[in-house]
Each structure stands twice: as C-alpha cells, then as structure tokens.
Length: 332
Ligand code: TRP
Image (cartoon, rainbow, N blue to C red; front, side, top):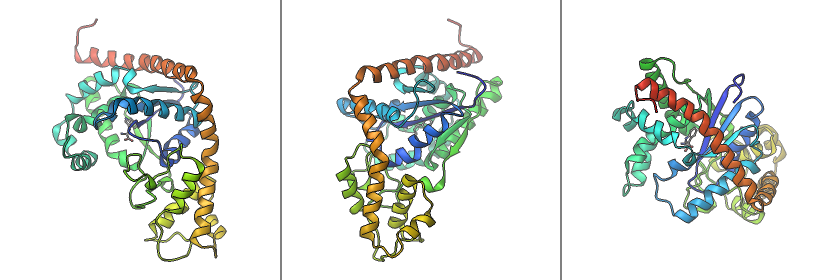
C-alpha cells in the first residue's frame, strides 16, 4: 500500500442479508472514501460464528456480500476486499491481544451484554472476545480511521485502549485508530420498530429492505411501514416512523429534510410512502443490475477475493511479525 494516504479499515459481519441500512450507512460511504484513502474492506466471517450458522447458507451469503461490495462501486483494484477467514493473522493477533485485554473491560461491552441476553442458550466465549478480534482486524492494517456506526463506538474505543496499552509496553507497534462516524441523519431504522436500527438479523423481513429485494417487495414493505395516526409528512419528535421514512428518502435522493417536507406538503402518508418506495427502488436499481452481471461472472468474483486475501495477508503478516518479535517469540 502507498504510504502517503491514510489507511481506512472497515467491515460488515456476514450474518444476514445486507440491507438498505448497510448500503446507506456503510457501502455507499465507503465508495466516497476510496479516492482519498487506502481502504481495506473485510467481510467479517470469523465474527459471524459467535452465532450458529447453517454452513451452506453461510457460504452463499458470504459470497453474496462480497459481490454486493463490488456491485456498490468499491474499486477492488484500488482497495483491498477480502474474507477475514482467509487471512490467518486475524485469529493469531486476536489470541495475542486477548492476553492484554482484561475480563473487566470486556464485561462492560454493551453489545456483549445485549447479545448474551438475547442468546441465553449460547453465551460462548467468542461472543465475549468478539471485540478483541475486531481490534485485531483494525490494528493489523495500521488503520488510521475506522468508519463504523454508533453501535460500534465502544468496540473501537477498546481497540484504541489495546493499541495504546501494547505500545506502552513495547514501543510504537500499532497506529492508534480513530472512529469515523458518518452523518447522524444516515442512521436507517427498522420499518416496523422505528426506534431500533434496521437490522439484517431481524426476524421480521418487513422491518428491513434487503439490498437485493425486488421492486415490488420494496414498495410493499415501505407501504406497510409503521407511521402514526397523524397525517402530516413532517420531521417531529415522537414521529419515529415518519422521521425514518423521511431520513430514507433524503438519503436515497440526496435532499435535505426541509426540501422533502416541502415536496410532501399537503400530501398524505399514502403518496409519501409510494414516493419513498420509488426512490429506494431507483437508488438500488444500478447496484442490483451490477450484482446480476457479477453473479454471472463467478471467476471474476473469485479472482477479487483471492487477490484481496493475498494483499491483505501481506500487510497483516508484516504487522504480526513485528508484534511477535516485540513479545519475544523465537524467529522462524
Ligand atoms: N463488529 C462490526 C459490526 O458488527 C463488524 C466488524 C468486525 C468491524 N470487525 C471490524 C467493523 C473492524 C469495523 C472494523 O458492525
């Protein structure tokens, strides 16, 4: 990688269909960063197995996510796209960092507390050490910036703490990463429970729009979206459903809330929802078209992740070698 640009690392866990939220909140933003930064984008499949996965579905979905990265316009020549499980240094550095992370700080992670409450039947130790693996992901590439949603901020803070702790003992080994939080307005919520984030692991498919939903499905889901008993298309406290739809509309049409409110003045929720639906369909259409082309070109997609694993592997191995030497492991 060139040294004159800052390094960005980010990734999405491969645990469900990618949604409109992933597109607006992550993928589309990543395409805007690629001109100014050296970017490494992973499909975080090691993280996915903290929850039991069906092997065939998992394999299929992981490839689908990689294909969607490319279809969204991430340039795989300029950036590195790879599967986390293809680069063994992630697991190796995670073990190492785990020996520098305290039980206490990991116990305080709100996502661990939430997930263990939701999966009471399978509170495995991977769920607990999940943020250590995430720190390894980031630190291996000496990333300066990490675009993440608000829900990952605490994990990023831990990555910084671990980097600082390690550097404090052994000298400058890791770049201390910073969170790169996108615009607040870009947060896309569930269509059915608009106080919760739109999630790819939502059991109710009406709560989210998958990036590959066909136009009819998109229109139908938006039509069914929860609103309120009022009738005014306006952004107001307490109107979570309408606010979310307005947010979606603005994100996909690149307009401001004020412009949108003006456009729908005097119109009812029916017209509004139809317009939001159409706008989402148009926004996803080119991505879906590229996705279909890429799906017919499996060799190409395979060449992307193979090359990605090799390039990522080289950078990651370099950092890991440095870490091992500092710790005092015998040179191979
Ligand atoms: N935990 C992140 C999420 O659920 C995914 C992730 C794993 C990640 N490793 C990362 C994001 C490293 C940024 C950097 O969204």
